[in-house]
Length: 116
Image 1 (tube, rainbow, N blue to C red):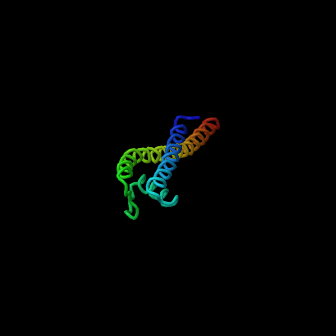
Image 2: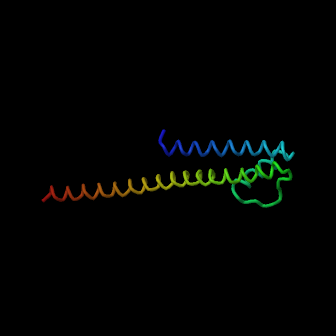
Image 3: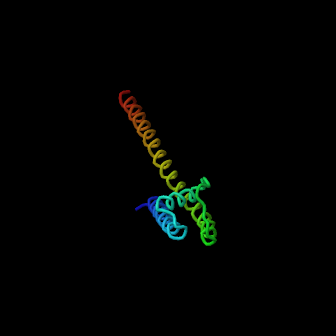
């Protein structure tokens, strides 16, 4: 497994674990249903914050602040890893095409030289 793939797997698993943990936390501490808990967790992680749901207990307010500070960098890291993988593959594809063109051009030149 490549380093990039490992980084991507770590980022994905970190996000999944954080979403599950946040959802369970808000479900039991705020007494929200599962959908609202999941929704609030993802809205907080992505810094959207519509304001339709908000923590009402002091412990929830404190942990939500810590949750946002801890998860936002992880989300950005995950996006960066995905973007890096995409652009790396795109670059390899472009380079591969250019290499094929160059090889064909070299073969054409060699053929012309041999004919002379």
